[in-house]
Amino acid sequence: DWADANIHILNHGLHYASCVFEGERVYEGEIFKLEEHTDRLFYSAKRMGITVPYTQAELNEACKNIVNIQKVQNGYVRPLIWRGSEMMAISAQKNKIHVAIATWEWGSYFDPKLKLNGIKLDISKWQKPSPNSIPWDAKAAGNYMINTLSKHFAEKNNLNDSMMLDYQGNIAEATGANVFFINLDQTEIHTPIADSFLNGITRKTVMEIAKNLKIKVIEKKIKLEDLQNYKGCFLTGTAAEVTPVSQIGKYHFTVLDIIGKLSDLYQSLVRKK
Image (cartoon, rainbow, N blue to C red):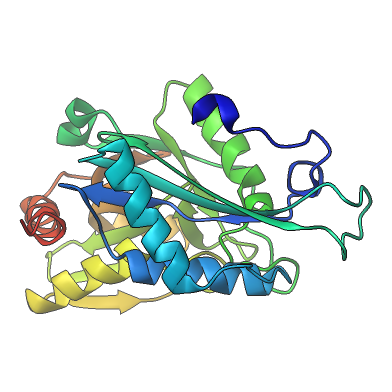
């Protein structure tokens, strides 16, 4: 119960970000790609030196159970793993590992009215760190600090999100979603190489949908000035799903029919019932 969900104020996850998590969508009472999300959760934990005190099968069952108990039909699931409070120092070798799962009803991440015309992004001053400086491929709490700073700055300027560059100045991702671009003649979709940010589960799903439509998908390094060569842009993510983008900084994009088609096909996939 909400009132019983208490943790010690000196837990290591809060003070030193030794915490990993997942974000999962519930569609019509079922979690989409639960096994893939749990795989990634355990991979993230391993990258952080955390040994999870449960099996993946046990976590999958627990996620399904909490969705059923809460009677969530269309919502979100948040599994969370963190180090406890036995040691309060940089080192936390003896700290107990805790696991919690929460779920709640949740609609669209971005306002559906905004999505019709495409959301607007600024360009963050915070860049993704180099791959040898953080466990960049883990969904770890500490990795999201600069994402929050970037999102807050965008919202203060009445924008919806922020585009983040990598440590070399290439396009990386939005604060909680991967990004795709559509070339001028709408024959190809380009997306950054996932070498400093998460290769999202929704990203991979939408790439498969595009390939099934015989649309060429190219992963490549994309510079900020390259954005003038694209006609369309959209974000993908468990929360964002498929969201059109109309502006990134000074660059403007058209909400193309192909983006709507990809979104419709994604929705038909996740809502199989």
